[in-house]
Image (cartoon, rainbow, N blue to C red; front, side, top):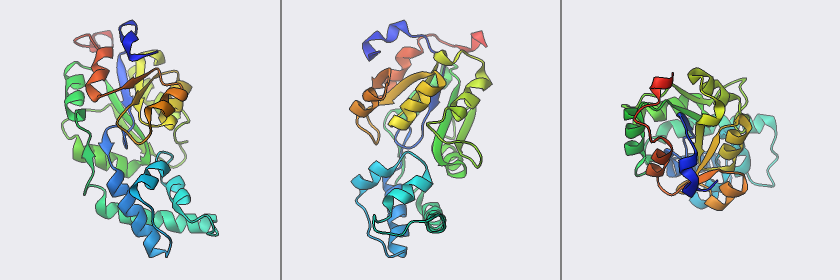
Length: 234
């Protein structure tokens, strides 16, 4: 479905991805990753290259960043991951910013009574830190990052966990993200898959993965929530 057909869709709640969707975290992620690589004596990567590594959780991020000729085993990955988390803990909020239009969008959705959640493959503690830091005035029903024992996106478990809090049919819940992982999560959960044009992946990738629509700017999402409040149906 294209954005032009938005009037045929009635949505009642929304789940957002975090990195590349609500927040531009790229510089802080790249600098943390390169600090980890430098400390281990590995070659560092450009910011553009790091953009391509993001989306499947911190463990996959460090695996992708390691040199192809490195002897990667579970012990080394665990060491890299530990150092990376330490480095990211030093600079997670140095250059990170909300994308233009996102604070206004969230405030308006909240004003309209639209239930909102966040689901990220970023570690749960960092996900919650970022939301508390950058969106302190926004009420989310749930903010979930990657948790031990819970499969990460694109497994739909996290999305369905949040959706169950509201009790709406899953096809009345939008899942908004910037990566193929997010689109596959949405479609796997039976939710309305919304891609964004400002994130870490090109819109064409999101369309190819089955995005129902692509947002050119954050405010475009409001087209799907035209009623003053959806809470009357809860």
